[in-house]
Image (cartoon, rainbow, N blue to C red; front, side, top):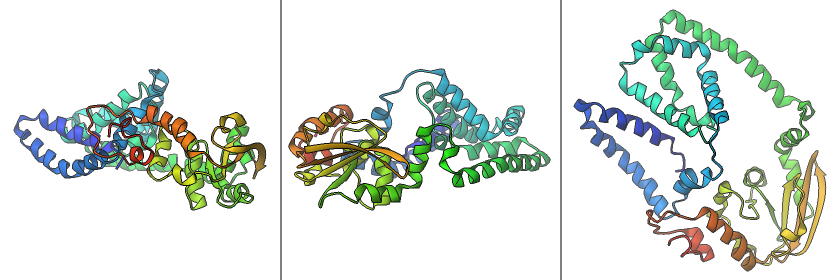
Length: 339
């Protein structure tokens, strides 16, 4: 419900039809096909704080800034994914595939939009993969069969060092990495079941394991079999917690907060927990800071931490009507979330 890459394909087809007078009427057919699926998404967002729109178009761009480094990274990634020989063949045979209007629009419009986005943000490799098959269809239209066979062999040869390298890295000792912080990241992912066992072994009855960032929380949740919430406002990714974590149910419970290799001031948590104790421990080769506290103060947490999350991540534009917002109703922020 939150992945909007297909929208780019819709823009491409719509733009293509707008520029084809004899096919303009098919634009309405395109819209008729899109609307049932778009309506499901719109209805969901109307009743869920517009969380998909807020995540994709507002909150995740808070750190965006102009820079050429991200553009060069994007262009280099595209050269790598298409391969130099395929890209050269496409450019050399542009006349052969330029007449394929729908395919050209379906490829160049999304990739062109990603290029614009790369002016401010890093474009993820997985963003573009859904559109690259179109490039290879166009390649087949402008390249002889002999060269297509050669390209298959070129790519097979190119894949060999990748397969060997990744196979070795999967089984190599973490110590091969020069940066100690990266070694710890590798161990954090590899040894998570054992790490969780150690971190939860001495927790008091009814205690809740939490962490300070979304990525480790998600990994821990997967292996732990129960939700590991993000304690604090987190960033925009941590809003995923807002849909299924209920801090009201933790009122009065003991809380354990773990952070990987991060110094923590006990005063940060003394407003929400009693008897706060901070210690460090190395678990399976990964250094952790562990904060233990009792008697979780939900009202205070709600008035400070959750209110900060509302002010940063739930400022829904006034043009978007909010029919429901479970997060706002759960914690009493109806007015702040436009409900």
